[in-house]
Length: 156
Image (tube, rainbow, N blue to C red):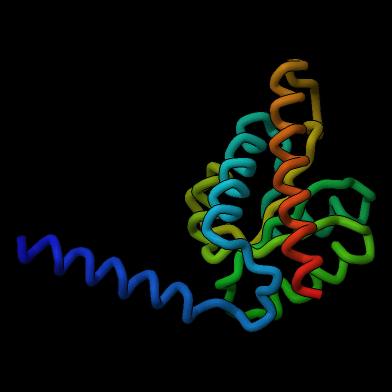
């Protein structure tokens, strides 16, 4: 029993470290429920190849006029790597949200390498997906975007 409580304490300390490691510009930050839903959307989008991973790809896609939801990791260091992404998103009228961990974002995006940001699109870059899957992805996307806009509206 003692080892269980020690494991719980170490897990709690890890969680506190993650919270302390958040960058000061990580606003709007997704809450627990929204974070879970957002990562689920990222996972589904990566399965259907409707996902752009990394700062370089995301910035290129935004500049080319592609629309979607930008999910940015909140624990990026140095912070200069991603400071321009929210500005690009606001100029292009793309909703964005921060999630606490780059590791969780990478896991949801089906990569082992920690990822700074991803752009979730409703249509794949190449090819097509089934109509039913497209509608399911679109409904999840719309739900997350509406929650993100609520969080953003309450913040500003």
